[in-house]
Image (cartoon, rainbow, N blue to C red; front, top):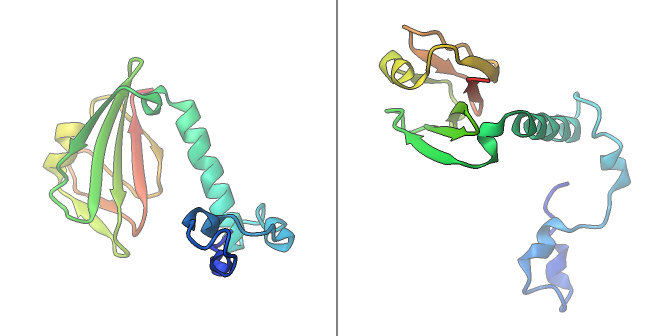
Length: 141
C-alpha cells in the first residue's frame, strides 16, 4: 500500500503520522499482490523473499554486526555472524551500477561462502559489479 495522507483531515489523527501507513483497505490493490508484473506484486513477492532469506539463515537472527568499508559511498557493506553462520551483505543504494574493488571482496568473503541472494555477479579475484538498487548476500551455510 502507498502512504495515505488523508489522515491529516481527521482532527483525531492529524498529529499522529503513524496513520500515513494505515489507509483503508484497497482490495483492488491487494488482489494484485501475487502478480509479479504489477508494482504491488513485485513489492509483496520481494518482501516474501526477504522474509524467507532471514528465516533461512541464522546469521540474521542476531549476534555480531561488522560494517565493511566498501570504498564506495553508494554501497553499504556489513557482515553478520551468529550460530556458527556468517553472512556478508553488499547493498547498492544508487540508481546506477556500482563497483566494489576485488581487494575488498577478497578481504571479507570467506572460502566456501555461497552467493544466496541478488542477481549481480561477484567473482573472487575480480571487481564486483552490483546492479542499481540491488543487494548481494553471501553465506557460509
